[in-house]
Image (cartoon, rainbow, N blue to C red; front, side):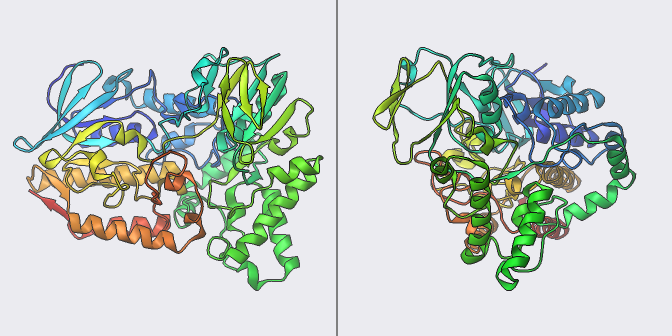
Length: 530
């Protein structure tokens, strides 16, 4: 690939980067995608840990920009596993001949805005400097592994793995004593699979996790065909929901119905499976008292499954259900009935350190042959802050975000002209079905770039006042919900020293789409063209 001037550089070849490349080509732009990995797929390229699976149903976790693609691709399970999702991303790249504009195994090191030329100068690990008019950061919300600074970890003589950066050749845990740190979504998926193979699995849990059953199953061709026969209706219905997912949001309030009616609704949602459980009643994320009824229901379910009452008690979360990511599981709690699985509560007995042969916690050493870090990600801002991005007057993005991320719509950043973020902080992103959210962002960015060209302008930049207003609105909306009340990665609490700011927009997908459309219809209100 040459280092000629480009119209657009896209950082990342996950689902956001692929969609942006396809849309930019349709505008006739000269575009290049720079991707750190050796293939497409983004998070699904890196997250190959045992049991990795999407928590949005596969018929909805897919692109909508091509009806032929929707009709042709065949999903085989209700919730697709990582290999199938990666195969889908690779199919899209091949079907639309996207690879010829993707530069793999290359990271963006820095990007500096040249105010005189109205262009970005982008340097990469390949030693080149790219000049481009527009930059689109499709770096993903969950793409930078959060690696804990455990004393002595480097001395451990066995292999260490992180769920977010798993060996592509896979790992055989047969006959090994394995320790896994963390009980978030990745761990909930990995633990049952690792427990089947390992000689012994020790789970180090700091915070117990609410999970609901996935009830995953094969997807019969007839069911898939019925959906495809009227795909447009499903898509339209999903876009009207808070999360952009086709689940039924009950308008009744938990405290307004009888305990018996409440129990029936919870049982029905439980039998159905999926994240629709949290939509059982309209007040579950507004009222602590209502939320407590759902939380207790799940705790009771744990007690029904886990045979040892003491273990069941340690597995029972005590925080607000829904303020941390609600996990889907397949056999998670049952794993703790296995004689080869041990639960260690590191909230009461923190990890003191790592030695050559294991982990020290609770005054004893737990002997291990391998360690799995299921410690999540530096979410939403991690990938952006790891690139040296300089805007107007040399202002560094990391400096601007020192007290927390600030964006206009999660799409643009004041002081950084011609730069866009796909599902950036301040957008619904991780609280929604990521694929429709990505496509909405990509379509908006493409239309904005076309508008700039039609006006004969060289730059478009978010105005500081508009950004301030959106940041304030985002914070105000978050303050209305229980989701912002606990130490979750939504607020950066899992990364030491990270500012505590509720990062995604929680006003709902339809409200957000309406706001974006209104701003565009008003000639991109809150933006300055020059």
